[in-house]
Structure formats: C-alpha cells, structure tokens
Length: 164
Image 1 (cartoon, rainbow, N blue to C red):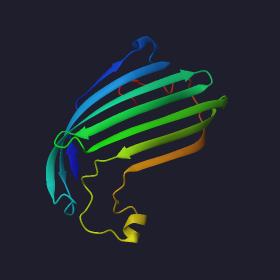
Image 2 (image 1 turned 135 degrees about the vertical axis):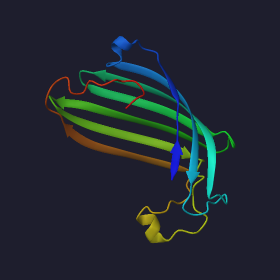
Image 3 (image 1 turned 45 degrees about the vertical axis):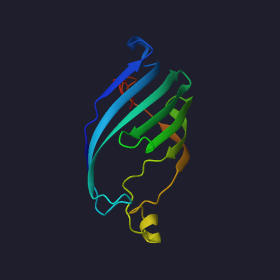
Image 4 (image 1 turned 90 degrees about the vertical axis):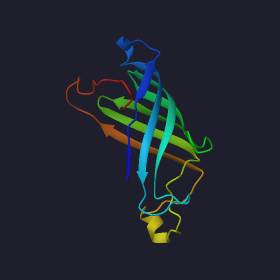
C-alpha cells in the first residue's frame, strides 16, 4: 500500500491559445510518500516514508494528419540519488481516413529505483501471474493498433494541462 501527495508545477513554452495544436511542457513534482509493504523488502523495510522528485519534458503536436508526442522523464529519491528512473517514450497516431487511425507507441526505461521488491525468492508462477516482480535494470516495449472515433467534433476537447 502506498499513499502520496504530489504537488506539481508545469510550464508550456507555447501560448495557451495554441495548446490544442502544440505543446512543449516541462513538469516538476515533489512526492512525499508513505509505503507499507506486505512483506519485508530487499532493504529490510516493512514501511517507510520517502521523498522523491520527477522532472519531465513532453512535446505534443496535433496536425490534420494525426498527432505525435515524445516524452522524456527522470526521477529519483532524495535519500539516495542512486535510486533513479529514466524514461523515454513516443506515440504517433496517423489518421488514415475520417475517424480511422493507425497508432504506434514505443518506450524505454532505465530502472534503478526498485525499493519495494520482496526479500524472499519468487516462484515461476508468481512471476508469470505478475504477483511478484523481479529486479530489473530496464524495460522496453511497443504497440501498434487501430482506432475508430465517431460523434461530435468537440468530444475530444479537454484541458490540456498536466498531460493526459
């Protein structure tokens, strides 16, 4: 179980009047968090209070042909700067014809902040069922999909602040 509060500030380099077409956002947040673990961690903890920070930058462009975005993010814990995570991911959505889009996503993460891993060994079944996590140094992934949207032309207008 984890509980946190994350005040965040954001700056968009483009004016608000064009924020539905383009954004270059910088976000910074500080997160104090209380973690209560179900089993003892590899750091011999059952619960703890930690402070972390995250800085991210996102470029989003929406055009007639579709949209694209790329994000870079880094975070770390204040008590140990060697406990960090770095992520980069991008998505592209091409509108092939009215309402029908081809969507591509890809991302990569360097992970050095897995503080909640249980001390005990995990069985193959627990890993495959995603009940336990194994220590890793990175993740990567991608996806491809199609989507069809219909309805009002105004149904996707939302406040663009703080990303999705």
